[in-house]
Amino acid sequence: MPLTKEPEEPREPTEPGSPNPTAGERDRGHRTHRPWSARRLPSALVASVTLVAAVAALVDVVAVRAGRPAAAWRRHLADALATRPVDDVWMLTGAAVAAAVGIWLIVLALTPGLRHWLPLRSPTPGLRAFLDRDGAADLLRDAAMRVPGVSKARIRVRRHRVKARADVRFRAPRQVKDDLTAVLDEERDRLALARPPRIVVRVRQRTN
Image 1 (tube, rainbow, N blue to C red):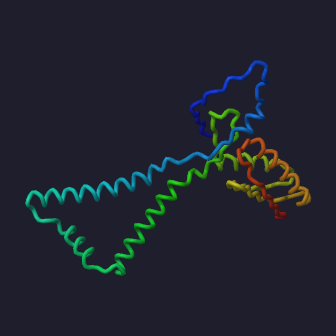
Image 2 (cartoon, rainbow, N blue to C red):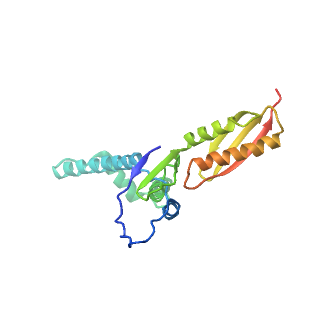
């Protein structure tokens, strides 16, 4: 569960005799957002490819300026770009690849990423906390196993929904489902998630 501290914003002076805001009011006024990924791997990959291409072109240009013939790959590339029509298969393939890479970079720039982390409610605006989905699933699974009649539980935590599947060895499946739903709702509230997901419970009677 990573914790990050944001720079504190200047507080407005309170007038004498004015009541201090309660914890509930502070929680309602502060909304925790999902953390943004640094995108180090895509950035390093794009920068490396660009650097290699730029260095290769620069070295060949310097060699030509020094009186040497241009490299074979650059002559072949220049001839292909000058002679191939626009509707050529290789031209269309290169354009499609460039467009796909550009769309991929735009999506990475506009989306936060780190979908495996769930933001938690924060009592103060400068403090942010996040819970791993696997950790939340483990806590919910432990709570589900404490319900009488449940022999096995499988929990999958998503951003907007928690899917719980349980095997029932004894007791009526309907009663076990009601108890399991209540226990999971209570445990989810204890996690203090900023956006509590909806819980979907399915039970299955097992006799063997």
